[in-house]
Image 1 (cartoon, one colour):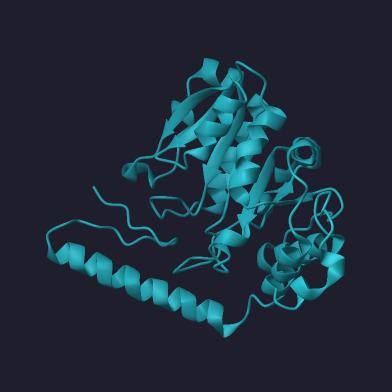
Image 2 (tube, one colour; image 1 turned 45 degrees about the vertical axis):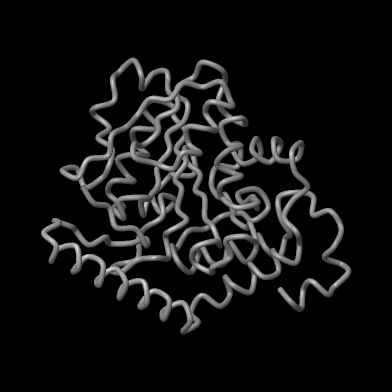
Length: 276
């Protein structure tokens, strides 16, 4: 970032869906990490943090009166973006007995038929739960049946303590019905820098880009350059050291709460501990 910020070429308006070099770096990361192939030109959009993209997505795809399926507990922006778009929220309860996953069969038939968008968030804020690839396969089949767009919010995908969490885009045909948000804030400690990307269905991303083009002027190019460096250095020892630190903190907190008589299940990912 310090190097890129001194380059005058990085200081104009950063209009568009992201620098080609940034989108190429994202595509390369997705191929390495998930084995997912995407078109950098049409299937990736840079965002001013995932919060911005999440808040603007309903404006791009939800008509007034349409239903949006939101998890509870969940990130408040899923509801806020729906309200700004004139949509109606239907809550999907996340329960411990179901592994903190929504039970699709519990969604009423009339709600499924009215739904336009479903929000997912795995690894999950705030429960720390991780979704399996088989769950994502179930969700993609559900979305196809009822013509629902899936938006999977994945800012904690690289903050895990066991097996690497999957991407919904690993499911065959997922790009027909889904997009996914990834953030640099948590993995690379770039919270205030505001850098993220949405990836997946090109028609949905084109709609999101159209909204963004009327509301912002893109991500500062020097920050995009820093993002390229971050993605290309995912194997740095600092990333592993950070996760080891989070794991030590998790274990200290969980063991302390258990010693106090508080039943706690250690989270599989994220830096949250969800307690009764």
